[in-house]
Image (cartoon, rainbow over all chains, first blue to last red; front, side, top):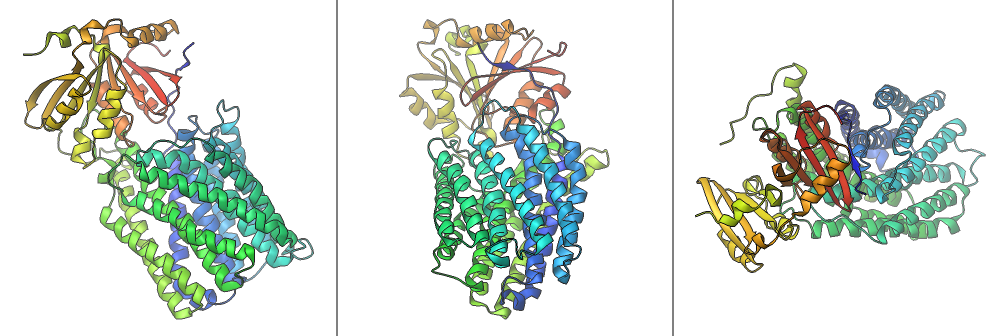
Length: 434
Length: 188
């Protein structure tokens, strides 16, 4: 029996992921532009209202919204079925933005009275997202590594938000035996390793080979990655929240093993790729993955107790959130956004006339500049934060800020191709095919 | 003079591979070509389209038992047919039986010698979609396009339906998706 299927012709929405990605890019630029003014704060302790505000702009406004937006484009591709409800995803965006703005402004002002309400609004948006994706993958016939990783990430997201709302309501006092700082550490690692990491590992395993024209991965590596995160993250989070270092170390080792296998896979994709030249989006992704090495080393150092204190912790956070995650997301956005724009503006004309390639929608000079500024700036920021020098932090923060602006300009140039569509006119005709 | 064996081969035995865009973009198409050669059925013919005459490839594929026939419409459009000398000894192409299986599933897809095959594996998005839509626009009356793909192209299907095409997806082999596309008729 040959499995056959006839598909209903409903393409995944283009404007839905673009709305999330544009909002996320705006949050990234705002966060990056704030860095030069936070030199003195970043030279101090991380448990500071302004740094909590900055961390939530990055983790929620930039990373979470970017992952959600990318999910609405990539998940229909990787699981090969449509999203359960695009309408629900559209409605949850304003609620999420309002909630994130509320949380960040309360952190920034150092006022906790309205924080729980804003956090609850974010929680409602996250619950809607989790339900939407859970219903999208429900009844999936083949639970690939990617599908299992996405399910794991959604569980991690739900736990992170529940933990965060509890923190907002209680400020960590008398609830978590590890104390308020332990609770903050647990919340951070639930977000980083329970939500963001499995999503990057899962989607990357399917999407990186697609872009690098490399063979898809197979074998025992998938089990180690899912097992390492599935066992390691609860151990790390519980150990930190309960103040039990004996749980943290084995959990951290399991997580490091999972991330190490992921890095090994990505190295394999790059090594065995059929694509001879790397565009800037892929360079961002590969550089982001390379940041796992210093970030993971510092994380293990902290778990072992060899390193401690705000300097090492802040450098670790910059390398993990700014290096690994942010550079990866910047790279993915430089691949996803041109495709979405191309699909909306030019796919209806493809085959009938000559249409531009994705490369022609991009701005390589701007992407190259953004790559230089963001990668060098982020690594330098981690170094200056570790050194605790306010003036140097301000300078390296400014480099990251300019890099974020150039990145946003590169995306903006690509989005300009949508203008003729919005006006109901045809895009400028390209030279006819010879 | 065009070898007679090429005229006798059914359309279903032909695999078309266009590497002009790869070469213009600076991409090395050798791996794609060899992948297409490896995937050829015993009586299969590779019809390679390139912006120049791929002379070095003649020797490479000759070592694997392939003869070639080259034609050119202009200085930057070369079409080379790579075929096995023993091709005419083979009969009953594999695709013919697969086309029958598609029909038996209750569709009204045209089948048999009117099928054009297109291999878009190994292309970066959105090139597979561009290649397929170009081939769809070139389909003649009663012709069917069979696309070889790595995955279900979820963004392609709506474009096909907007152009009045019907399609059936076959995932009988791991890592290989075949999409049969034809024009007209009521929705299946």
